[in-house]
Length: 140
Image (cartoon, rainbow, N blue to C red; front, side):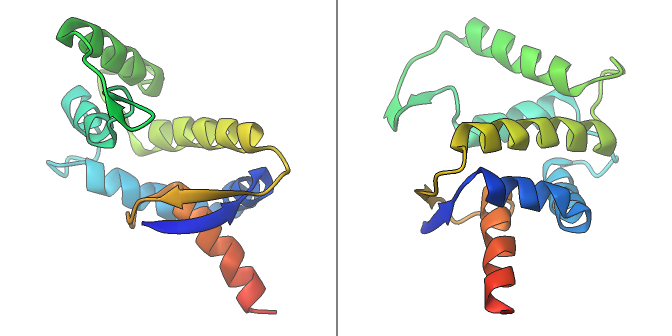
């Protein structure tokens, strides 16, 4: 785990750096594409979200969610990512939705810097945003 200082501008600057953002999203996509077929299936995306434990924990405390409710929630998330309704999520769809998520995070963070604890995860887009900002200051 690491502590970073981050605000909405940090996240927006990362998104606006198209090369860095695209490379990071592509790395994340590749790590989720378990069968290397170039698209994400419903099962692959669900596996990714289950590993993040976004729904099964509330402020770090495990909660019990009925399996049918979890399936409904994960199906809804998948349907949002599957913009063209093809039954799979391609790189462009994934990037588009990740950009929306990151912009929502930026809006939520606002302009006041906060300290955030991030798990050690080489695929974390928030960590990559903080790293990009740190690299700009290191170059000065």
